[in-house]
Image (cartoon, rainbow, N blue to C red; front, side):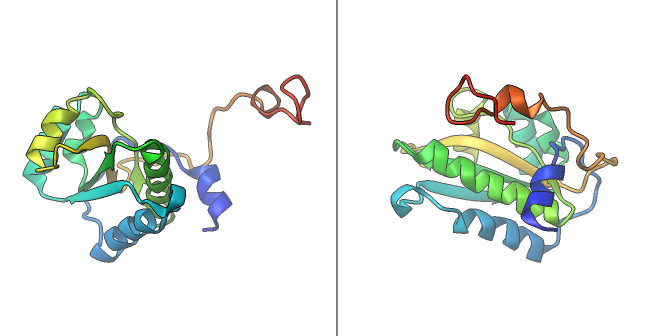
Length: 171
């Protein structure tokens, strides 16, 4: 799948079937994050790969916006340094992981956002140092149902894209 096709068709997946994700695919997903660009190459992120079923259930309970983590065969917890570009840089890494997984037929969804969402408890469970913040938890798994690749509801492009000035249509 080429990159644009992945972007065009990727959808949020919140229900996963029981299949495990092959170790080579997990490694590829993590490598996509690791290779992502970051401001000044600071790489202000840490990624915790979670595959233990009991820990996944615990994360699903703690992350108030993502109880479906409990049913995923894999979750990657993204922790960041407290720097100016950390959220932006880690967001790029998360998108790289999601698109890489999608190419392999594995769905995902961003759960939570730094601050709140039960993430202080997540940090304790995973022994994340106090000088890092949990930005997100990304569960991964094969979709439990067909997700209609590419069928997205989006505003018309002219409503959200302008040319040169905000008042000028893109078209």
